[in-house]
Image 1 (cartoon, rainbow, N blue to C red):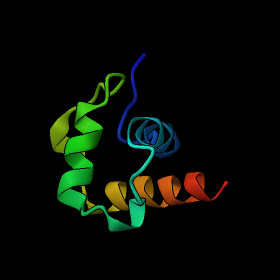
Image 2: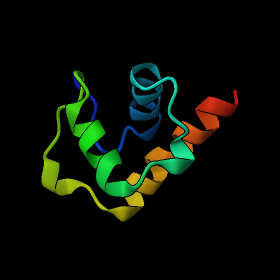
Image 3: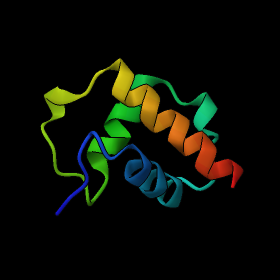
Length: 67
């Protein structure tokens, strides 16, 4: 079972593991969307993403970095 767009925390954890030196606050949504699509465990329709979903993933990634 792969990651879906609604799995914002799961995507954030995978992004943090894949890009440990990246500040998530500096990532634009175009890059963030592509990075999520490139995650090995990601398995969802690329067309189902939107600004709200990307924002949720980015916020979860920021919170993950702060832990």
